[in-house]
Image 1 (spheres, helix red, strand yellow):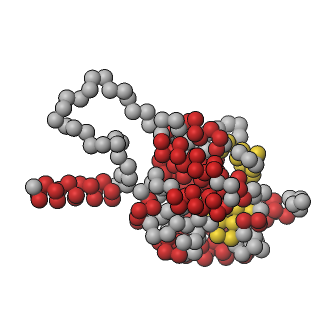
Image 2 (tube, helix red, strand yellow):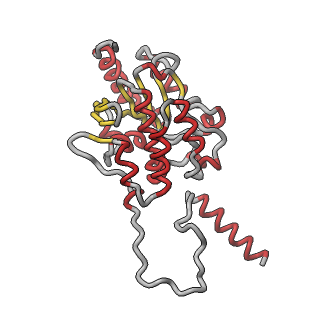
Image 3 (cartoon, one colour):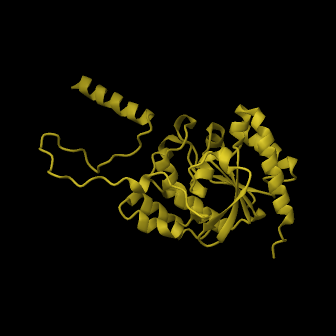
Length: 276
């Protein structure tokens, strides 16, 4: 009996290492009974990666509850996000949301940093080890590089930019977020954007760009130009995709492309009319 229990625990640990974070059924099946005939097929389309939208990318939070009527977790996320009427309420809603096992393995919720009123919002991928430890986005090596990049075009997180991530919890081992995790937290991200009401959004890396642009192309194809994205409560919002600072640390030759994106951002900000 003890050996069987140890084997089950080892199998469970292996599945956790592989990224399995939820059961497909509410209760363990009774293997001693014959399976029901002609079971209804499981529809996973709601958890599929988002496809491209033409002619303009769309990210509309109002469609989420209806689209996920058969997915309780996604519906709960959408309802919780929509109910938040302030950034503090949104942070509380994310902290209270128990639909993802990421919160069980992370140390701290990583919500945002910077100046919400700046008019420029940057959205990355997910917290890393340093971010998880301190509870702030982009505070490790990639964050230090991002700060230098911002300073090179006269910006700073203290008064010139507001920074967050697609995921508020660190994935174990800094692994790439799964499509299911991205889809689950996307309503919170869209509500975050609607509450901040930025004039421009910069998407840092492929995960953020694909999620909010609803695109299948890689970041090298998406970067370098503004995309018009519709967000509920704001309307059409310009979003610029660029390379993630962590990628630039691994691939210094790509800094030239990132610099071109920063110059485009600076020109666009300078050309925009003053708010109010």
